[in-house]
Length: 116
Image (cartoon, one colour):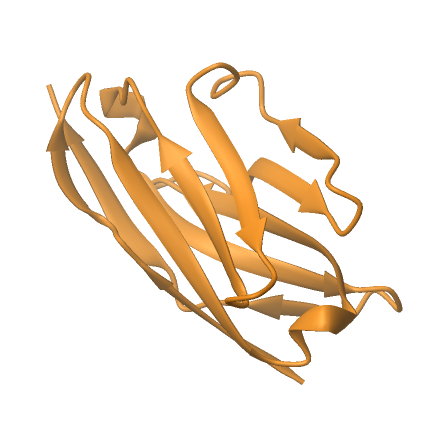
């Protein structure tokens, strides 16, 4: 069992930066991949970025070059560094973990609001 808790959301002006953190408790070492998703009001939840246990990363086209996903296994944390934020990045951001057997875990979400 893995518990994920996000932090770091808030209000920022367009062009600014935020760093989201995802603290994992439990069997962090069992996770095959960690992802960040986001959901804006009235829209479906979408995948933002993924990092695998091997370190491979994937980003949505809308955030490429602006967001960076990373993990710190020693601290059982994952992070999403968000630069050059735009108003369309406003959403609730969720941390997601997936085991090798495809069991999935979700955090409770953290609000990011970008003012234009």
